[in-house]
Length: 287
Image 1 (cartoon, rainbow, N blue to C red):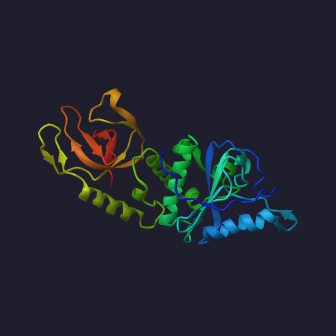
Image 2: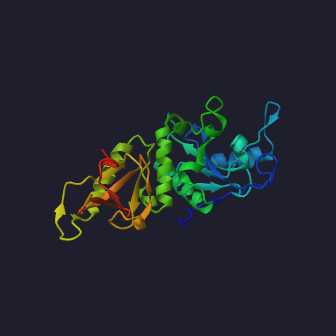
Image 3: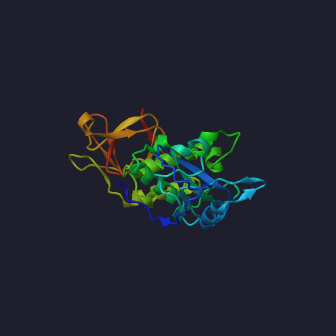
C-alpha cells in the first residue's frame, strides 16, 4: 500500500454549518478549487474552521461549507474532517464523496509543482485506503453539478486532458509504477520541457538496451512511449497469460529503460520494471 502523505490535522469542531457528524461511506473523491488564485491553504482552513463553523451569514442566509482536506500552494495537506464523516462541499455528492479543496495560482488557476504532487499523493493514497479506482472514482465538483452551475476546479474543467493525466498520474503512483519524486506537474506552463528533461534524465541513468540472450546492444530506442491502444503489460519479457501484470490504457505514457529482443515481437522494459510490446498497433514514440 502506498505510504500516507504528511497531513497537518486541523480538526473542525462539530457544528451544523460544516461538520454535522453524519457518517460517510466514500465511493468518490471530489476535487475543488478555492475560487481565487494565490490564496494559500491556511487561509482556507481558517475560513472553514473559524468563520463558517461559527455561523456566517451572507445576506440573510447562513453559509454551509467545509472540506475534508485542503492543499496549499506549498503542498501542505490539511485535514479538517475525518473521511468517515460527511462535509458540505459537493452538493448532492456530499453523501458519498471525500472533498479536497486545492489552492491554485496564476490567471488560469493552475497548480504549483508542490501542490500538484500533493494532490496526486493524497488521491492515490485515498484510493488505496478506500479501495477506489483512480481513473473512475476521482471526480470534479462540476461532474456533480454541471458546468452551468459551477466550473470547479476551473483549470481541470477547462482542460479535461489535464484532468485525465492527473488521474493517470494518481493511478501510476497507486500501482507503484512511479514514485512521488517522479510526478511531473501537467498543469505547469513548462510541462512539455519538464517531460523532455525527465526523459533525458531517465535515459542517462538507465542501462544500455540488451538482447536477452547474447548481450547485443541497441541504441535506437525511444526514451518514452505512449499507449495508443489498450494493451497488457507483463512481469516477465514474454506474452504468456501467466505473466500479465495489468493493462496499459490508451493515452498513458511510460519511460523505456531497455529494448528486449525476442524471436517474435520485441518488448520494451519500462522504468517500472514491467515489460510491454513494441508493436506499432499499441505503442508509439512519445514526442
